[in-house]
Length: 69
Image 1 (cartoon, rainbow, N blue to C red):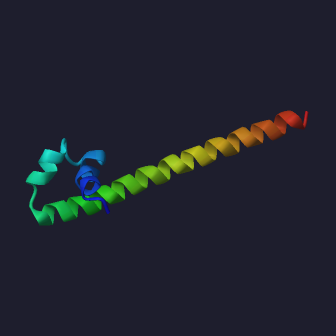
Image 2: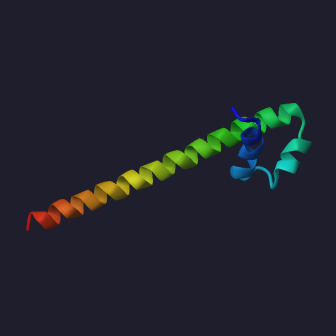
Image 3: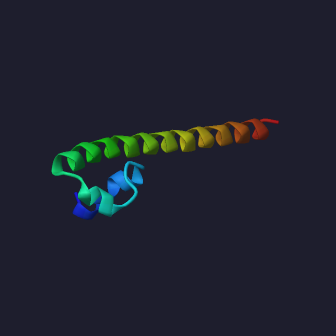
């Protein structure tokens, strides 16, 4: 994985305010927080994907209902 992205992941996940803060962490902290950040980002992505899928399904159902009239 790109090293810069590894530093930015905790910022994206809201675990740090800046890359500078992440860089001040010990290696163990960076690894632990990086793993936590990946989980948080994955969960958000999954939730957003589910919301898009549900929205598309609702739209499709409404379209089918309108076409059946």
